[in-house]
Image (cartoon, rainbow, N blue to C red; front, side):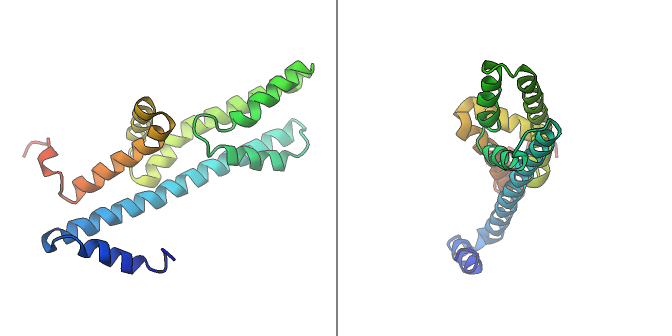
Amino acid sequence: LITKDRALIRHFVVGSFPESKREQTTRVISDLLKALSGFVKAYSILISITGILTMVSLKIIGVEYAFTLGVLTGLMDVLPIIGPGAVFIPWILWEFITGHTSMAIALLFVYVLITLVRQFAEPKIVGDSIGLHPLATLISLYVGLQLGGVAGMISGPVVVVIFIALYRAGLLQKWDWRKK
């Protein structure tokens, strides 16, 4: 429904602004929609990386249902902070408690590998997809987490993208600190 009426919605929103601001408004909306689709694309890629890496790793160490567990772990990757740990931490603890130390160590290795890959890949993939430098993405994720917890971590890059879109559209010209 929204996709079908996208042009109508855009026309309504842009038409709500004065004629002198319509070009800027169109640019801001376009930049924000591009960033939103990039954000969805980036996290889809990250979820896929987590799921595939989990499947392959579990298959290598001989775990049954590696495919199902990989899909589950990929889906859990949607949850900020908790992520794959929601699957791996209880599983690793169970393996230690039941005396399967070698399996627990192997699972711990897989979990650490997945976490490291995710931590190194996220700033680059998200940054490239939404048009932010990886360092800016990392800083916005960290600042967002510190200020607003999980919700802040998600909204941190979004706020930066909004400011960039407003700046590019010329709506924040007083913030131009460059020498002219």
